[in-house]
Image 1 (cartoon, helix red, strand yellow):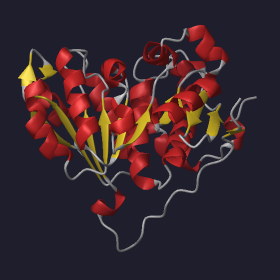
Image 2 (image 1 turned 90 degrees about the vertical axis):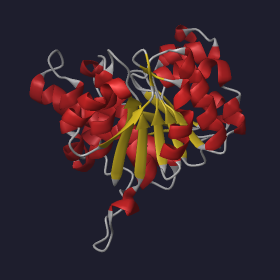
Image 3 (image 1 turned 135 degrees about the vertical axis):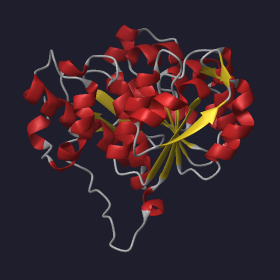
Length: 294
């Protein structure tokens, strides 16, 4: 059993200095969305904007540009070559240019499971040296190329739920649930990455063996879109915190608190992931202690 600690308080948030500008708070590039799943890209972008990132741009299949330009006032939109509603593998040269000035890349929410996606992710793992968050369909693409994690110069954070972790490891969901902290720690150490493994309790693991457990949150968050919200916050916080474990831990805590606030306001049956996004600001200053469950 790795040495674990429960997340019982906020990680002190870096201050915004009076003479700073948007570049001081991180440039995030989000590669997300496909036809039929545009909402995932919208939600992770909105939550990233709420997390304090200085400049957020979503790169998407050309067919979604009008959707995102209409819905995302504060983010920029980068069109990419489209292959039947998905980002095409032929987009690589444009993606390479897109990621060249980014501090963090979020890859995967709602991006689809076309063969092209794994090819694009493999290129990013070989070429990007900043911080990289892989979520959702990006994790599905990672299954066949996970050995590239060891070779990548990027600082990688993956954010799987237990079913996605089961696909990545070949371990049953039951065993993962029974060994949540151990599973996250072992994968982090084996591949030299950071892991945020999501269940009713979330385990956050660093490659050096540190593990933290988050209990904030509630069953009302068990619906499509909650993971997209968390992924966006992770990407924003990866630009703000020097330690990726602090970034992932605080993201898990803040999203959990925001989810608890949404449950109190709307009820667990009616709360939506977009309600959670709207409450991220309050969650950042809400005392964590009242959200800790044992």
